[in-house]
Length: 88
Image 1 (cartoon, rainbow, N blue to C red):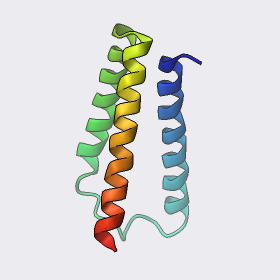
Image 2 (cartoon, rainbow, N blue to C red):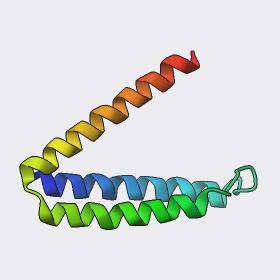
Image 3 (cartoon, one colour):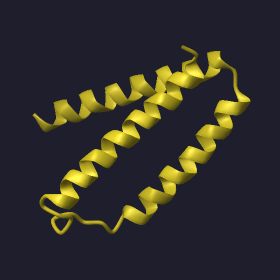
Image 4 (spheres, rainbow, N blue to C red):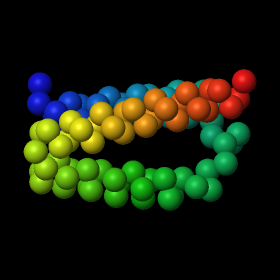
């Protein structure tokens, strides 16, 4: 599978996963326990990131997309490890 397809499919999996979680919360406990004041900024950032990512996907080669994807994945893993260690 090409790197461009992997990156796109990964984003789609995350989208469906988050949509499932939002529906579970909406039909379960509701959103009253959450501070949604940052939500418009997060939506704007997500949409903007989607447009920028799609543009980059068309412009750059598979090799560059794969390098960026792997680098971001490693950074996210590092951030998760840091957050785990600091909460212990």
